[in-house]
Structures are given as structure tokens and as C-alpha cells.
Length: 250
Image (cartoon, rainbow, N blue to C red):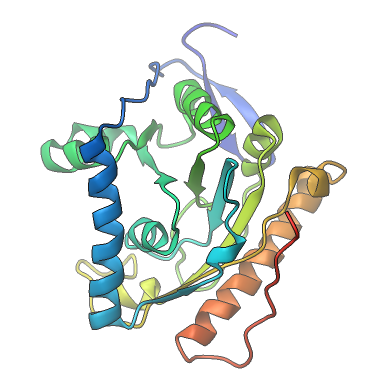
């Protein structure tokens, strides 16, 4: 591997690609950074609850003191904001490198300590920084579908998340979103009011997926995310019973 090589999380493997990646280093989080994040979470909860009937459940399933992959279905640009509001622990976000070039948006995502990634993959710097934060005991949000849904349903997952979970030896936390697709589908320029909900499921722990192949783990996570999506739909008043969600005893 050459120093300028980069890695791509795609399909069922980690692919070595062409040059072009730079090193990623995390900025020190100041007291003001941390307070801003916490206040943002509260603001989204309050405003979302007032204007969009934003609801969330399953917070007891978030590991209290270990790193983890927060794996959600992907419905719209609103998803990272809503997921951050639904999680009592801080989430680490991934953002495409070109977004850091924007004067306003770039400053904003730097303030929230996002990890720069390349359009077609994490890049070796993004991979290293993501693994570093996971091993340090932090939560990282990823969307295993790879892109926003075109119809509101959970799409087929890519298995790239398996590499991160196995290398960092962290639990995978399945999450389901409902409502952002109605609020801001990809073909619409501006968001509109809609009921919003997040459901967080029990983690899949490393000892539970150690003996699974990447394909088996991909299928298991897909089933868990679909269960969480079903639960989120129930919170929005769209379907029947919420699937029972219990702790794993960890």
C-alpha cells in the first residue's frame, strides 16, 4: 500500500483505491463545543416536539461506557440532526470532504467535530479517525444503505460497516427513523412539517457477531433496522404493535 492510497467501504469488503486522501486529525473539544452540542440536542427535542411531534424511544439500549456504531436507515438530510437529538450520548458524524470547503457549512461541521470522508469511501484518514474514536469509547453514526431512500423504505445495506465493527470490536446499535422522508424527500428542495420518530434497538455485541460471516451480519443488521423502522412508524401512528425491545443484559 502506498502512502497516498485510500480505502473505500463498499459492498462486502474494504477496497484499496487511487491516491488522494489526506490525514484526518480530531480537534480538541473545548467546553464550549461540548455545551453547544448539548444545547443543540435540547433545542431539537423541544422544537421537534412542538412542531413535528418528534418522539424517540429505546435510549436504554445505548451502551453507557463503550464505543459503538450507530447504524440507521437513511431518509433525508434531517437524519443526523434527529439521531443526535434522540441519543443521550454524543454522536460523531461523517461528512464528505467537499462540504468542508463551504464557508458556513464547513465551519459548522468542524465545530461539531465531523470526520471528513471521501464521496466514494471513507478514505484512509477517515477510516483511521473513525476507528480511533470507536476505540476511545465514542459513538459513530453511519448509514449502511449508503444513500438516502427513494421511497421511504429501508434499502439494501452495504456490508462495509462490518470492517469497522470487527476492527474496533464495538457493538452495532440498530436504529430506525420514520418521518424525515415525508418531511424532506430527496427530490424536494425545502423541508415541510411531518411527524418524526426515532427508535433505537438492542445492540449486536462483538461476541454475538464474531462467528457470523459479513453477509450474515449484514442480514442480521438489516432485520434489526427494519424492526426499529417498524417501531418508529408506530410512534408516528402509522402501523400496529411496536416490536418488543429488551436490553441484552450488558
